[in-house]
Amino acid sequence: MTEKAILPKTILVVFGTRPEAIKMFPVVHALAADPRTRVVTCVSAQHRGMLDQVLEIAGIVPEYDLDLMKPDQTLDGLTAALLTGLGKVMDQVNPDWVVVQGDTATAMAGALAAYYRKLPVAHVEAGLRSHNIYHPWPEEVNRKIIGTIARLHFAPTDVSAAALLAENVDAKGVHVTGNTVIDALHWVTGRIENEPALASGLAEIEARFGDKRVIGVTSHRRENFGGGLENIAEAVRRIAAREDVAVVFPVHPNPNVRKVMDAALKGLPNVAMIEPLDYPHFARLLSVAEIMLTDSGGVQEEAPALGKPVLVMRETTERPEGVTAGTAKLVGTDVDTIVTEIFTLLDDKAAYSAMARAHNPFGDGQSARRIVELLANDG
Image 1: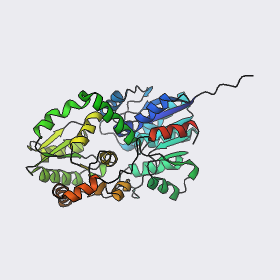
Image 2: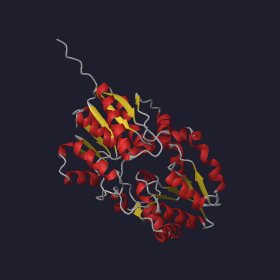
Image 3: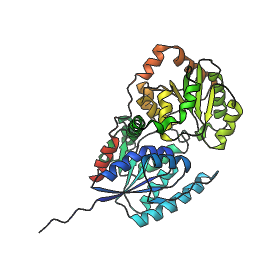
Image 4: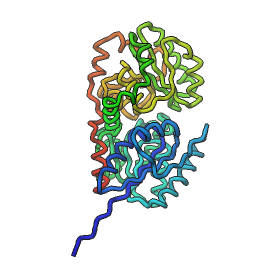
């Protein structure tokens, strides 16, 4: 009598934005390579163009594409479309696991749609908490909703695991895996080494600012819209007034961001306001920048992997590990504070070295492997 063949588990991986795609493609690659799992990808295209850039470089063609991006759509309208659209996909696929990442509307709606069907949910990058439901907004609440639903919680650090346990999440489902963004960064930097043309689009800017100290800037947080963004723009203007400094600023396509930055920074000789970068070019910017100035979450994890200090233009962070380790520092959106902190890093070698050499707490590049092992064995 022969043993019954064990069918691979069907894993539905759901994501919709560029940051999710970056952090999920190592998981998709690892699932596709494992005979114990069959991976099905569904993208919401909550962000369209920036998502597609990552899909292309990672070689992922989604089985399902909801194509939901609309100009100026409301959060409730987006959430409703996500919930019904993702639900239909789940009804067709009937997966053994639904895997979501992070804190987007796509991740939250994916978890909720799975819950309505009693499908088990696994959460990549679980347990991040700022303990302020409006910072980051709406991401803090999205994460808490997913944390209530998920059966498997892939926490990037001990701190995030502890946050889940403090909320009485079942300890059997909490696993510290590291953050898959480090897997992705190692993968893409390896590709660039073998194929330099992948990130050659910054060559003109690198040549133009060859004698300058480059500050990389990203800014797009909703909670900074209005006065916060105006302060950030003014701080960048003052920083770029230094003759030894150049700012490279991939400007987010959101008109709330663009109109503020154009008004304050357009035409300044030491500022390159450029279109959003695809992933290889963003990795290249991390390599050439001395300091990253950001209100993004992912940059707080990525830059330290390359030894670059990060100044975070937010009042709180759901990634306190970087602040504790010394790789990141919260500076808020006060103009004088941002400028002072940047100048300190530029002018004080000891202060710069302390941040650049601090241990990166976010992972070792093996997170996706650990996640697939847990999914294949149901935790």
